[in-house]
Image (cartoon, rainbow, N blue to C red; front, side):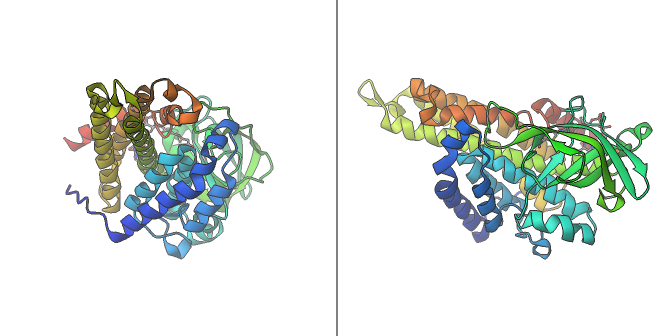
Length: 383
Ligand code: CAA
C-alpha cells in the first residue's frame, strides 16, 4: 500500500470551508447546546446547504461527489468545535447515504437517497438492540413475510439522529436459522404506523445530538423498501460500519485537536513561577506528547480514507484509525484538563466537554474491544 499524503487544492478548500463554518456557525451555540441538549436543527440545515451531509454521494444523486479524505477533513474541523454536530454528519454520510448509494436501485436512490444527500432530511442507522450491541449478529427484531411486504417487530437501541431523522435503515431478522445471512435491511420512513422513536437519552457527552431507542410494533414495510435484497442486511451493516469507523476516527481526531489547541493556547497565556506555563518542562512534556499522538492519529485516519478512495481493503486501516484516534481523543482531553488545572474542571473553559465528548468515540460504531477483534482477524487473513 502506497500512501501519498499530498492534499489537493480542493482538499485545502474543503478544510478551510469547514473550519470557517465551525467557527462562525457552530461555535457560538456549542456551550449552550451542550447544557440544554438541544438538537442543532439550524446548523444541520446549513450543513446540508453546504453539501456536508452527502459529501461522498455522486452529484447524480444530489451529493457533493467528493472523496473520503475530503469527508475526514471536514469532520475533523467540525468535531474540533463540536463533536455532537460531527456525529449527525458522520451517521448521515457513512451509515445512511453510503449504504443507499452502494446497495439501492435507481428508484430507491431517487426516493430515499436524494433528499438525504442534499440535506433536505437526515437519516439514522438501526443495528444495535438492547441485547445485540457488540454481538450484532444476535438480532432479535423480526421481519415476517406477508402479502406485498414484511411486518417488523422489536426494539432498536442507541440510535443516533433517532428522534429527528426522516429515513431509517433498520436491520431485522428475516430467517433466524441462517444467522447473519438471515438479516435484512429495511428502509423505513419515520411516519410509518408502529414505528416509534422513544425519548432522547440524557447522555454524558455529545449532548445536543439525539440518541434514542425505537420501538417497532407491527410495522408494515413494502417489498420495494428492502435494501440490497433479502439476507443482505448484515453485509450492508458491516460494510457501512467500516466507512463509519473512518468518520468516527475523524470525529475523535477533531476532539483530540480541539483539546490540544486549547491546552497550547492556555499554556502560553497562563503564568506560574514567573513565566508562561508553556515554558515549564512538566507542561512541555504534555504538549509534546499530545501533539505527537495527534499527528499519529491523523496519519492513521487520513491513510484509512486514502485506502478507501483507492478502493483498497481498508477494514483493518479503519479499525486501527478508530481505535487509536479515540484513545488519543480521551488522552488529549484529559491532559488538556490537567494543563488548565482547576479551570479545566469547569464548564466555562470547554475542555471538560472535550473529555465528555471523547469517551463515546471508544464506544459507538464498534467499541475499542471490537476494533481489536476486527484488526486481529484481518491480520490472520493477511498471513
Ligand atoms: N467488514 C465486512 N464484513 C465483515 C466485517 C467487516 N468489518 N466483520 C464481519 N464481517 C462479515 C464476515 O466476513 C462474515 O461474513 P461471511 O459469513 O459471508 O464470511 C459475517 O460478517 C459474520 O462475521 P463473523 O462470523 O466474524 O461474526 P461474529 O459474530 O463472530 O463477529 C463482529 C462479528 C465483527 C463482532 C460484528 O458483530 C461487529 O462488528 N460488531 C460490532 C457492531 C458495531 O460496530 N455496532 C455499532 C452499531 S452502530 C452505532 O454505533 C450507532 C450509531 O448510530 C452511531
